[in-house]
Image 1 (cartoon, helix red, strand yellow):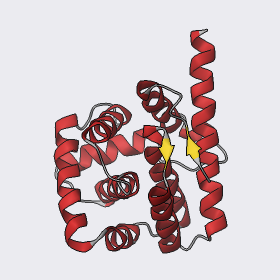
Image 2 (spheres, rainbow, N blue to C red; image 1 turned 135 degrees about the vertical axis):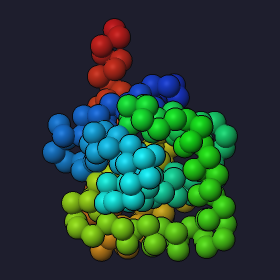
Image 3 (cartoon, rainbow, N blue to C red; image 1 turned 60 degrees about the vertical axis):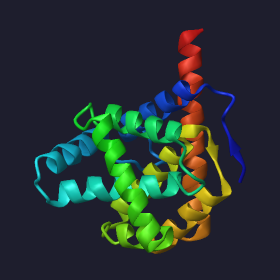
Image 4 (cartoon, rainbow, N blue to C red; image 1 turned 90 degrees about the vertical axis):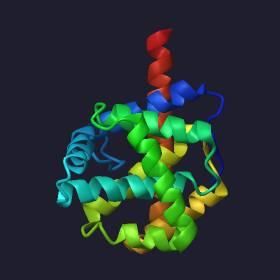
Amino acid sequence: MQVDLTCFPQDALRCGVEAAIRGASASSSLSLPSSTRLAQGARATLDGCYEETSAYFQSILELAWLVSSADGFAEEERHALALLLENVTGKVVSHDVLASHFRDLAQGCEMLGRRERLRRAAEDFADRASRSEALGFATLVALADGRLTDPEQEALMDLGGFFGFSRDQVDHVIQDAVDRLRAELQNRYRAEA
């Protein structure tokens, strides 16, 4: 499936992804973590409370990074992803902390390989609901630059496989994420008109 939404400005794409995540509870077809859950996880992580909430946050962040960086990760993308996550968590975690975390993830990916890192991070999601949220979130974050490239889609397929989802189920999540982002972008432009 070719996905190219680069006709929209980068800021609009990032805002569309943020709006989709913030409106997660309003979506019946795409399962996403709530911004409240992400903020709680970020807060627990910063406080050094390594519990289920912080483990969820760290793992979902790693999965999103692993998928969205599968086609390379330019400095602009790193900045945009850090800004998106900073905003979605209600600025609980700063842009600089996230940028540093992404550099650490890149080093880990170089040592173990992307597929192995995906497998390890996928193990942190024990139930189907959290797996669906992680897959939806990783897909939406990968769309933040306006494209879903073949390497990103293959990383999503790998992740879905580690979660026990079929390729058709992963394709369905991808389509739901694209539809959700398009709807957010159309709402934004309707509101501005």
